[in-house]
Length: 195
Image (cartoon, rainbow, N blue to C red; front, side):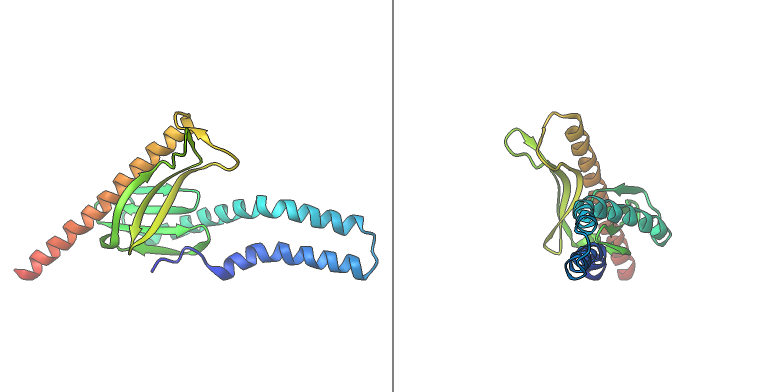
């Protein structure tokens, strides 16, 4: 079972700034302190939390993933996405992922449980705001984002969209190669066990 989010980790990352805002507000109300400084700090935390915490989470994910690379056998393909780092061994049929909201574990995925691998261009009307490689793992949809746009859409012919679709296609092909390699390895093991 793949665990994309570590709830305790997320509560710490977002809970500390929120708790600090509440404490500052309570202190300013109870101690009749000048309102300007605590309210200004609350405002700064209110603005900074949604901007800096996601970036901090992504940097922490990349750092932890780099430290865990030694645990993964023969990396043929590595992809750093918005929400995860994907490690693929296209020859041996192994796949591992480190998720942004759970960066403490390299989660190995059984390629035999992967189905319906495809590129999702996210096209809506004339543009898109998200492009991903997606597949089903034990019947649950897994998306690996190659493009996420906030606050609007990009045209389908925009260079960033075309590049993201190309990356998602390459990633889909690599995941398909992992699944195929794993099937071939299982067939060899089955053949050896019969002989």
